[in-house]
Amino acid sequence: MTRDTNRAAIWEDGVATFYVYSGTGNSYRVAQWMAEDARAAGLKATLHLEVPHPENIPGDLVGIVVPTHGFTLASGALGWIRRLPPGNGRAAVAVVTRGSVRVAGIYVPGFEGSATLLLSLILARRGYHLVGVEAFDMPSNWTALHSGQHPDVVAAIEARTRARVGALMRAIVHNERRPLSWCTAVVGLMLLPLSLAYLLAGQQFLSMLFFAGCRCTGCGVCATYCPHEAIEMRAFTGGRRPCWTRRCRACMRCMAYCPEEAVEVSHLLAGCVLLMALALPTERLLRHIGGRIPWLGLLGRLPRWLLDPTLGVAILHLLHPGFQRWLQRPAINRFFTCATFTHRYRRYHEPATSVRDLVER
Ligand SMILES: Cc1cc2nc3c(=O)[nH]c(=O)nc-3n(C[C@H](O)[C@H](O)[C@H](O)COP(=O)(O)O)c2cc1C
Ligand code: SF4
Ligand code: SF4
Image (tube, rainbow, N blue to C red; front, side, top):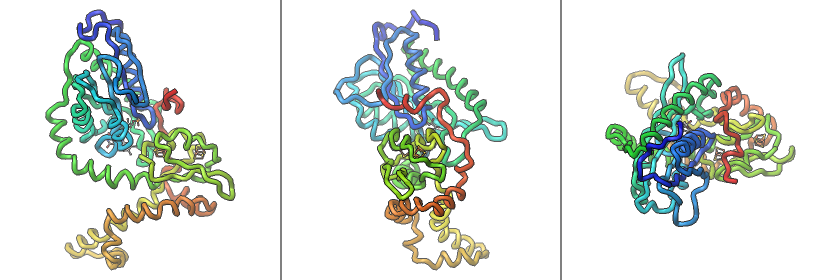
C-alpha cells in the first residue's frame, strides 16, 4: 500500500494498536501486514503479542488477530482475548486466520465456523465498536492431521491473502465498515454446539497425543517457547526430556519449531481411543443392518461407561502423566514414533517468522 493522503478524517494523527495470538506465525504475519498497511496510510501502528495490563489501549483503532481451531476460536486465544482491557467504544477490526490446503491441484479454503462470530460477540461485549470482521486463509498448520504444504503452495496462499489484507485495510482507513456477514453469523450460530464440544473435549483430546519421539535431543526449545508453559523438561535415565502437560492448547508451535522435528502426535493412541468411542454405535449399526464384525462385538461387550467418548477423554486425562513417563522408555518410544504418520510429515510454520518473533521482547 502506498502512502495514503486521502484517508478518513477520523484517523488523523491516529494510532493503531494490533494484538496477535499466534501458534505458528500465520496470525502474526497477517497482523504484520495490517500494521504495515496502517503505517502506509499514515497511522502510527504497533504490534503486540501480549495483551496489556493497563486499563487503556493506546490509539483510535485496535486490531485483534487470532487463529481458528476446530471450527471456532483457538482455545488458547479465548483466555488471551478475555484479558483485553475494556474497549470503551474504541474502533476495532477483528480478524481470524484459517487453514487452507491444496488437494489434487485444487486450493481448498479454510473454514472458520463460529470463530468470527464468537470473536465479534466477545469484543462487542467488551465495549469495542467493530468496524471490520474478516477471516483470512493462510497455509494450514494442522500438522497433527496432515503434512505441511509445499513451499510453492505456501507462497501462493500467502500472496492471495496479502492482497485481501491490503483491501481490508484500505477500506478501514477510508472509514468503510466491513461488518460480519449475516450468512457467516448464521452458520457460526448453527455450529456453536460443535464449537463447544471442541473446546470442552476435542482440544483436550488433541493435546494429550503429543510426545517427543526418538529424534529428541533434549534441547528444551519446545518448553522455552510454548505460549502456555505446557511442556516440562524432566530428568530421565537417558537425560532431560520434554513431557507434555494438560495446559497444552494444541497450537502446534512445539511441533513446528523443534529443530530436530522430533515432536510427534500419536496416531496410534488417537486410533485406539476413537475405536473405543465408536465401537458401541458401530456395533449397533452393523447389527441393525444385519452385518457383524466379531472383534467389534467383543468391544461391544465391555461396560458401556468404558466406551463413552466423554469418559474416554476423562480416562485419557487421568492416564496422561503416566503415558508421558511410559513413553520415555527407548523401545516404547521408538514403537510409538514409528507408529505415527507425523514422523513422516513435513513440518510447517510461517516461513518468514522465527520462533523468537512469537514472544514479546
Ligand atoms: C488444532 C487445530 C485446529 C484447526 N482447525 C481449523 C479449522 O477448523 N478450520 C480452519 O480453517 N483451519 C483450522 N486450523 C488451521 C489454522 O487455523 C491455521 O493454519 C491458522 O492460520 C494458524 O494460525 P497461527 O499460525 O497463527 O496459529 C487448525 C489448526 C490447528 C492446529
Ligand atoms: S522435542 Fe525437539 S525442541 Fe523439544 S527438547 Fe526434544 S529436540 Fe528439543
Ligand atoms: S505444548 Fe506445543 S502445542 Fe501445546 S500449547 Fe505448547 S507449544 Fe502449543
